[in-house]
Amino acid sequence: MTSIAAARGTDVELSRRAAKVVPGGMYGHQAVRNMSSSYPQFFAAGQGALITDVDGNEYVDLMCSWGPVVLGHRDPVVTEAVHAQMERGDCLDGPGPVLVDLAETLVDVIADADWILFGKNGTDATTACLTIARAHTSRSVVLVARGVYHGAAPWCSPIPAGTLPSDRAAMGYFDYNDRADFDRAVEAAGADLAAVMLTPFRHVEGEDQELVDVDFAQHVRTRCDQLGALLVVDDVRCGFRLAYGGSWEPLGVPTDLSAWSKAIANGYPLAAVTGREFLRDSASTVFLTGSFWMNATPMAAALATIRRLGEIDGLSLMRRAGSRLREGIRAQAADSGLAIAYTGPDVMPYLTFAEDVDYARMTCFAEAALAAGVYLHPRHNWFMSCAMDDDVVDRALRGTERAFAAVRNQFGHS
Image (cartoon, rainbow, N blue to C red):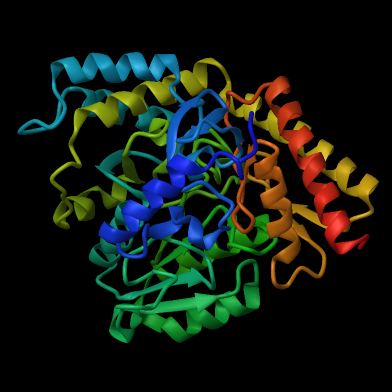
C-alpha cells in the first residue's frame, strides 16, 4: 500500500468538485473537515472488516461506517437477501411481506417489544419515541442527559444554528448517572413529565465513555413508574452490539419505548421503534411516515442481519475482537509510557490521552494510524464488527503501535 500522502489525487479532485456543488464541500458527521485533513473523504469499496478509498488505500475499518456495519461490509448472506428482494421490488405502493416477517422476528428477539414501527434513520426513531410519549401521556416535558446525542432534529441537534429556543422549550436536562441531579430535573418538570430518554451508556464525542450505573437505571425506572412517565432507551448506536435483546436487557431494567437504527440492517437504511403493549393505541394515533420508510430492500437486509447475528452468535465474536483490541492497545500504551483512558464496552471503545484538552495527541494518533492503514476517529467511539477476526485485529494493532510511537515522538512520555 502506498502512503496516503502520495496517493490522494482522486480524493482531492472529488473534494474540489464537491466544494462547488455541496455547501462546505461535505456535510454532517461524515465531513472529514471535522476530523483531519489527512482523512480521505470518498470511498470506493468495502469488504469484511476492510474499506478502500477512491485512491486504492486500504484500511481496517474501526468505525464500521460509524456503526451500521455489524456483520462486515458486503456480508454475503445480507447481499443475497438484498438482491432477491430487489428482483421482486423495493419502493412499491405499500410494504412488502418482508415487513411482517421482520416485525415478527424483532418482537421475538427484543425483550420489551410487543410491536414495531419502521423509519429510515436514528433521528426518525428517537423523534417518534418522543412524539408517542407525549401523545400517550398528554404531557410535554422530556428529560435527556446533558451532552448526549439523540439525533439531528431541532429538539436534539448538537449544533444550534437554525434552531429556535422554542424547539427545546419542553426539554429538560440532567447529568448522566447522577441521581440527585436527575431528581432535581424531575421536580422541575413536575406534573408535565412525559418521558425520560437515555442512551444505554454515556457516549459523548471527545469524552471518556461512562457505563450506566445499574442502580441509576433502576432509579429512573422507579421514578417513571411513580409519575406515570415513560422510560425511553435510545438504542440507535448500541442496539445489536451490547445485547441481542436490547442493550438494557442484561440490566433487568425494562423499557417502555426503544429507538433502533445503525446495526439493524448491516448498512442499509432502516430504523425502528419498539414498544410495550400498553402503548400500542398511542403509537397508532400519531402521524409517522416517509416516502421511503416502507422500502422492502432494507427490511430484507435487516431480516437477514438479525437472523445471522443469532446464528453465528455475533455478539460473542465482536466481544472477542474488542477484548483483543483493548488488551493490545493498553499494552502498547504502557510500553510507550503514555497515559491513556480506554473506556466504554469492548465492542464500542474509545481512547483518550491524559491532559489532551485540545485533542492534539488524539489527532496525532489518528493520523498516524490512518497512515498505517487503520481508520478510526479521534473524538468518536469506535465499533467492532463480526468480520474482525484475530488477523484483522492484529493488523489494526500494528497500526496503533505506530500511532503510539508517533504520539511519543511528538509529545514525549506522559
